[in-house]
Image (cartoon, rainbow, N blue to C red):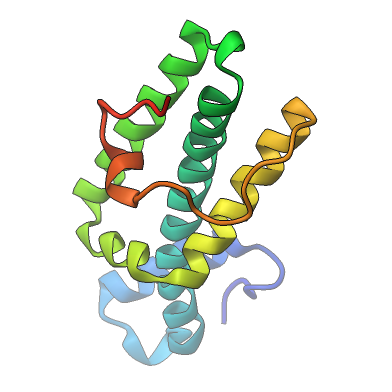
Length: 142
């Protein structure tokens, strides 16, 4: 039977890959493989949300702490935008994530929490910029 998923997911995955490559489809754990494939997409969405939350937190600090603006913030904003753009190039279907209001709201909430934690300040509860501006390399809010 091989290694149970619950005991060692890495060994299980390697065994399942070998079974698929060998064409031994009757021995694969098809349901679990399908779940793992779906999880890949969810992982990509989590990565995108994480990068976007960092970007938003820095944009919030940039806008509301003008006296503390620094090159480090600018570099973080630019790096996150580049990483997001790279992720969207590699997985273009992720662009549809920006149409999901719930996902956007959760990401904004995470960004506000991070910025508030770092600064002790309060920030708007809802989005204040269009997503196109947030992702635009030239956009730095005044």
